Length: 346
Image (cartoon, rainbow, N blue to C red; front, side):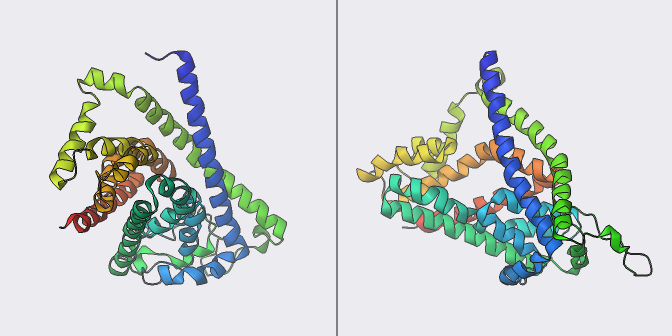
């Protein structure tokens, strides 16, 4: 069993992760509040209307979608505000989250794929892999747009709720339609900024305790996974066995098994493992990319448990967070399976 020092290190890591998410989340929520308060949402929405229009989403929701390119956490935080303020119902929010996919991927191009992954894999395989992943993400985004066009209508979206603050505090109107007292509304820029800060503080107060609690539980389960597996009568062999069966079914080289296992735990490690096997001819460019995509499928179980569940539950709560995870995972696996079929067709 691990000692007290290991437990302290583990909790310190959780605190750092939650703090980092809190920073980006607070930025996203604050910008959402600020954009509404200053009327910037409408201006940004002009750029994103080509995404939101066909999907039957309000133009303003495009602000969150575009923000995802800079920070997925901030983008999700803004979408959470739109949902809680009544702009989007659950179905419309799921469509918006789906459309988010490509823009979340775009951020990783400049932060991970180009500076790290492509140099490890080499230009040919690296570019082919990143392009394939990009096309998969784009396909998911387009799926979201089509789903919005087919599944959404005015019943799923309350465009009038855009008059509300992002956390759902609507500007009250009397039953006869007259506006509320002007003294309740911010008049100066300073008042608008202070109101946005206040709204952001309230939002973080709701989300962070839930986020921290879930991260602690997941971190402890991951850290003590070996002991838990032993008690349950299992072992790490299950991952290797599963990878072997999947790669064998697809007709990939036997060397794909350790690569898939490595990718399931860490993308960079998987790239390091497969790189020399590409150089010596064990893998062609196509079979290398296919192997890495299989590693991505296997890794969903790990990454969902370690990252997606804590993050999505922290943002949305357990019930709706589970729906977001199910939709994201299902679409990713479906489109990756199609990409594998194309890559591995003789």
